[in-house]
Amino acid sequence: MAVETNRPETIVLHAGWRADPTTGAVAPPIFQTTSYQFHDTEHAANLFALKELGHIYTRIGNPTNDILEQRLAALEGGVAALALSSGQAASAFALQNLARVGDNVVSSTDLYGGTWNLFANTLRDQGIEVRFVDPSDPEAFRRATDDRTRAYYAETLPNPKLAVFPIAEVAAIGREFGIPLIVDNTAAPILARPFDHGAAVVVYSTTKYIGGHGAAIGGAIIDGGNFDWEKHAERQPALNTPDPSYHGAVWTQAVKPIGPVAYIIKARTTLLRDLGSAPSPFNSFITLLGLETLPLRIERHSQNASAVAAWLTKRPEITKVIHPSQQTGETRARADKYLKGGYGGLVGFELAAGAEAGRKFIDALKLFYHVANIGDARSLAIHPASTTHSQLAEEAQIATGVSPGYVRLAVGLEHIDDILADLDQALRAI
Ligand code: PLP
Image (cartoon, rainbow, N blue to C red; front, side, top):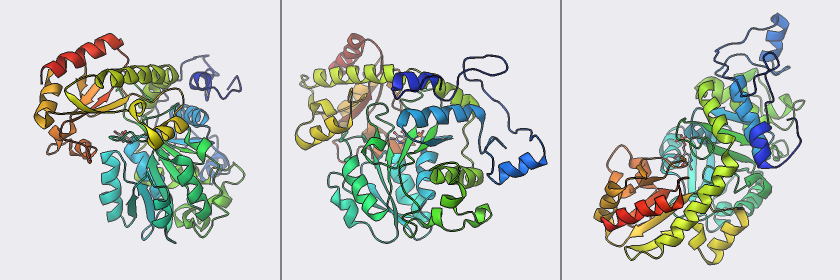
């Protein structure tokens, strides 16, 4: 980066790329190639042996993806990142990188429905047990830990409760055991900085606020470089014993000359190599374009969502408004400890008249889109109870613990008066 800074507004525009050395092109180029010509046989041998870093094949790395990775790592205060084709790939890889057959992970119960399915079913079928605990009690993580626990997992600002996760408290418990806390920060980029509170790994669905325009699916894992994997060799065998899938490399030793990046290099050179899930450089270009305005957008998403939440509290049709700005007591204290500069764009509410009212509300919306997504520049809404038996069942699962009249809004960047006018006319239609 031309300017050394830790300010997000500058990082998203400058980290990882200045200009193309040959053409002077300023916008990050789309390197639409599968492979990269080696200088000579020695160069090829060095790349494969990790003696030298460079590109070999786009499934494992690509220069456009690399700019996104550098920018995200800088933004988050981590040391390196791995861009992936979806947020689902990011959360799967984040755990598979540490846990093997017979191992377990302790996770917060408050998760995106798709992550819940991945953990409760797909990872279980692969021999990795995920133990779910109540995140409002950090000590529950300790109680669920045993000798085979390899990681803790949580979301910063999970739906539908929007109760911020106690990152520092759980990260500190994990560090006593040599267990890293992995945090999905999808709903709160810029606002929350999990590494500042002791998290070791951050994952994102870049599909949401980072890309920000509902145009490209993507994911990322960011390595905080702040976890001593070697010190906890018995706890973390995947990084401390010879890996037969990479010439017997012991990852904490093999990458030492490059820096504290054993975790992320292993994810790239084994999981991404073997399972695929590489992002297309075109999608990374779109994500980078969105990322350039993330600090501005997240501020406005937060302002609009807080205004919507305050407005909803005055409506007679609504029994409950779910947004950190409306929380009290310990839950609010956590929101204020971990979220800086706003509470994010997500708002939930419960309609007194139940499921039928939820359906009518959604069908009456004109400005809000009815979609299974969050984090678009446009305002979005969904009534999870309507989608329970459809292909959107995973979205419905997030409604666990809320009433059939629960509606989720992902408040966008339109003028606040237009947002409120649409909500008003839809509430009148129920
Ligand atoms: N994590 C969270 C918090 C999400 O909301 C989502 C998607 O909704 C994901 C992960 C999965 O991301 P993707 O849809 O990019 O695979």
